[in-house]
Image 1 (cartoon, rainbow, N blue to C red):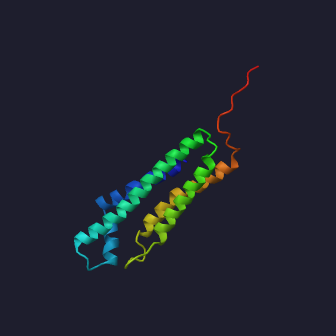
Image 2 (tube, rainbow, N blue to C red):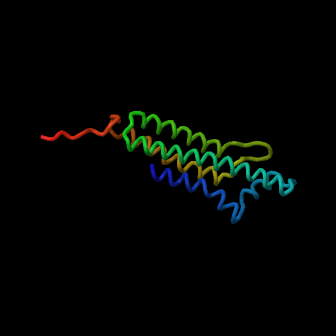
Image 3 (tube, helix red, strand yellow):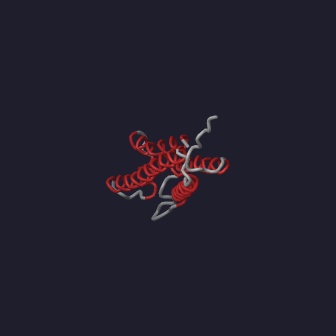
Length: 145
């Protein structure tokens, strides 16, 4: 679960590192709309960054909440982890497939692939939680003789 949290955190900062260095997101917008002035390219790039940032920050909150629930052995931790996994797959699918306007894909494919990595960690989490014994809602207390 900590690997999924780390992958989500990496996905949150990559767009900012990209913008500060090679700015491939602006190039992505320019390929779709070569006639746009710089201010429209910047606006569209920023919209993509805001979307990715908001969703990954929500993902970080989801990971932290799920980690807490599993650590406390809450009865609802497995269904919660499953819901978080489904939301993660939905986000990754949207990033990998959403097209609009002149975009073949609004979010560049490398970012879609990056969005899928935490979802893979989510899959591993769900599987491991299903293999683990039932959540009891509390840690059992040892009986002393």
